Length: 259
Image (cartoon, rainbow, N blue to C red):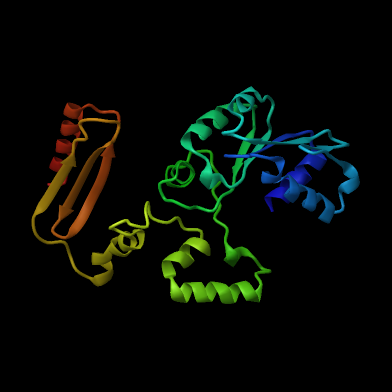
């Protein structure tokens, strides 16, 4: 769907489109073949000039370029006039690469399109665009339930995966990220099941109110704070850009609020 949208945009406007990924050791690693197939399938072959590492529309002079961010950081920084940047397989893009790419796409009204299958919940791409999304984002989740042509053979495979391994099913077929590690002591689905469990089960928090603070006195880690009322965790917070004294004051004020 993204390839088709970009091809149609190129037929209508003189856009410069950068197709990027974390690593591109050769042009065959890029989406150039996908774009070629889309152009041919839609019957637009006569409109486009397809070279080894570039695609250009003969009428609008729109062009597609293909680069690996980590392979070509200097080249990425020097790119000018990019209208649309499509980052494919973006789950592999690191923080360092995003910090190079995002400031490069600076033309007025330019856009960055990010497509990926979430892998690790702590990956920078997932944290940057899903957990802490920017204000000007259009965030879409698309999986097999949105495909009207989902084939029966895949439906059977999906149902078998759901029966055998619900966690893997949610990752492969619903696009949910996995925990930080396969060896994680506390699984993501356990946290989800525990969220508001007291409301679902019909019991109220009772007992002492206990607050705890992780001062994180060395290193770049955030300060941590948690408060529970009996068995119910009422608040979890993190404090950024504080020294140890400021962190202690911050945690103390939260503890007073929480009783």
